[in-house]
Image 1 (cartoon, rainbow, N blue to C red):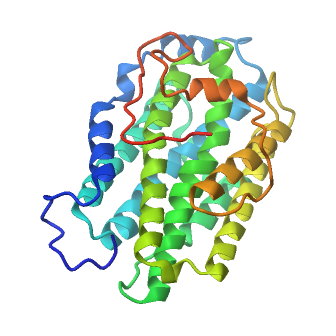
Image 2: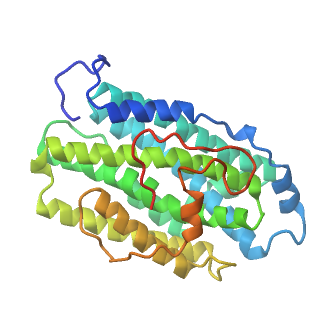
Image 3: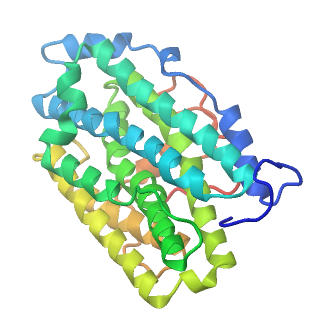
Amino acid sequence: MLNARADVNQLLPLKYSWAWEKYLAGCSNHWMPTEVSMQADIALWKSRDGLTEDERVLLKRNLGFFATAESLVANNLVLAVYQRITNPECRQYLLRQAFEEAVHTHTFQYICESLGLAEGELFNMYREVPSITAKDAWALKYTRGLEAGAPQDDQDFLRDLVAFYVVFEGMWFYTGFAQILSLGRRNKMVGIAEQYQYILRDESIHLNFGIDCINQIKIENPHLWTPGFQAEVRGMLVEACELEVAYARDTMPRGMLGLSAQLCEQYMHFITDRRARQIGLAPVFGADENPFPWLSEAMDLKKEKNFFETRVTEYQTGGSLDWD
């Protein structure tokens, strides 16, 4: 996985079949945002009484975070992950993932343009909303050009994988998904909600690919996974959870029907513990109860249609996916 001496251009024979399966699943799941109608969303957005002011603030801040977040993830793939992974089928998947991140960025541009939102306001929100600024700054420190080969450098790379796969895609995106899917459940902004479900489908595979990479690197390089390093990673998860709770308070100061910053905090504790277990760490918070059972239904990989009843969004598993 790291520092391989074999030819990185020689795809066959496959060493990690799970990576190739995820690449094929990504190809099968191909979609474009312009396939989803925004007519109902546009009408609701322009309607005087269609959305409350709190819902409008939530939507704009949610889009403001995601509009730049997907670009940060894509940049990290190109600047850090692709350069350090020395397995050809993993690199094949990374190229697919990078394209999907571009599609997600396209999605937010499409939503912004459809609703007639001020592009400057949306795409500069990471500079103006403190909780978004803090999250982006936290993640950016892990994107760096790394020299390959030294144990410390390899631990730096593991930190990067944790920061972007486990935290960014596996924790931070979840509050945003819950917010928009909650609106969709109430038949509001259903076009945006449908696009978020497609993004969610993609992210499920991104997350599990990253976790598989982390666990494979641990197997091949057990000297990297020291007790001290494990404690550091647990600390990263705690910091990330606190940053996401602050973001939930920024975007939902008064909450809305079935959704509040307090419930998002409980959910983040639940998700953080699940992510810790997936990479072989003890739970951080001891949170076993999911406060959003409806969100688990939305993420059910066996469903035939999403709960907006608009179009089929059946998941290609690409391996074992574990959402909750």
